Image (cartoon, rainbow, N blue to C red; front, side, top):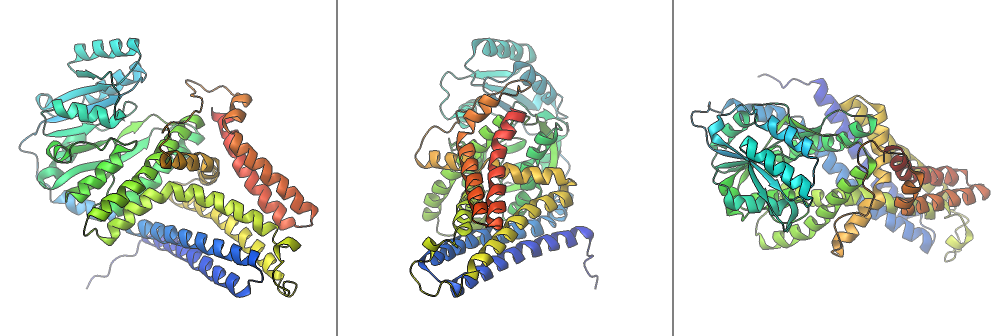
Length: 516
């Protein structure tokens, strides 16, 4: 009997799994220790809070470990699926749609011309430009271009439903059997996109095929932002695809038109693609993820652009949590792994932001837990006062591990310590923005941010950076001030801990100043 070969990749995956599991186990062990040694109501409250955070962290650590491990086997799975495909004998019709909204006309025209080079019978492709622009010069420029190049130009005066609304409007006019979607900033890099993906649709129950989305190379900042997507498409998406919960990512994918019509189009939410993916799954359609890059988006070069993207994602994910809860109540049987995938997706960015903010708050109370005010209910607090020291030691270790994990993993999988450090800092820089987006979604406020848009090469403007990050600056100043107070009380650990958090939240202002 042939034994499965243990490769370096498998060892790395297993090591990653072990790290995540050990982190979860250690958190619960320490939480138990706190309850055993608790010596006051104050410390009991800290122990309860820590247990709650440990439970959330444990769930996401285990889920991350599962994704990392299962993603290793996906290449073999997709290769087996691809090997069974038959060569195309019949070429179905396909609509290539590009939704735009006040985009740079030069970029739009350049990428449309790239799409027209697709290696597929020209008579079987219809190109649609779905223009929701509000600027007349852009509208006229794109309309004239489309007339010259044989592209169907569709303009809406009413932007109801935003991108989803534009696609649904075009769906009413579309007669093609399949729809491929590309964003305005995505440049085709592989002309075999349609030829490669259409054969998968021999499976009549297949609703859509999604490919890997990445950005083209830019600077250290934009390449680090690209890692946000890379972690999802390299590890989470393959795991989800094995559960038939692969997310349609909004572009660089193909959808069967009849399936989309059966689902009555895209749900008109901020992240319409995620909602569509869920509805496709709940209606017993299959989905597939192909881990190959066919188009590259323009790199996100400015911090303000990243903020707007993350705001939209977190706003949409928060909407998705409520939506999924209501839909799941109506469905009798949703597989356990599917539930796990959808809940973790909805809570993902909320987890990152809220956990960081809660742990920051907890660190303040831990740093000052040795004060007499913290021990007013039990007479024996002097006998067990070392619990404060242990809290600080463990908190410091947790902080260091939370820093080492993304840095080391980024080095292992993407070959860069610098980008790992940047990922770590960006999560703190974006924590308040993400939390505010979640609150806006809960209270049904405007899904957009008020941050200043920066076009072209960003100019360093300290006033703009300060005004747009006043909450982050306030939190940073508070943490540094409390760190100084801890220092005056001879609490060196608290001083280092709180000052480090303060600097990390200050990175929001630094990123905005440096990158615009």
